[in-house]
Image (cartoon, rainbow, N blue to C red):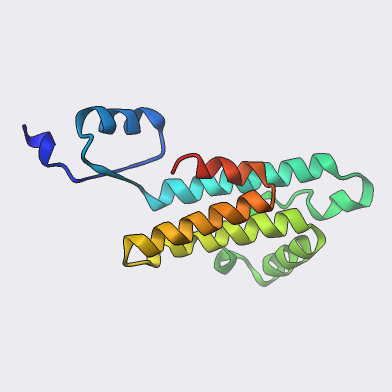
Length: 144
């Protein structure tokens, strides 16, 4: 059968796609596409933002309130005011800063030319998310 020659399956992170690939082309390596991985990381970062807002009280919340899109936007797409707001937000909240840096660092994964280095990089970021005790980012690791 032709499916026996499939070596690579590129897909989003939806479990039924992985299950189908594993069932019909078990020899194929699975590669999650960048867009969906980054989107998943953005959702994890937003969960961190929401949990930090819920955890904090009073004046500490003011840095987080209304900053969802500032936090989720690519830095180069922000205005000068947006970049300043992002800098203030990240200085004010250590957990958000850590989650943001891990998410932004993850984009580097697609610059690796050798699988071994990419895997090492991925595992190190997953380890850092584990050490940082950021559950939303640790969830991403479970897709490995």
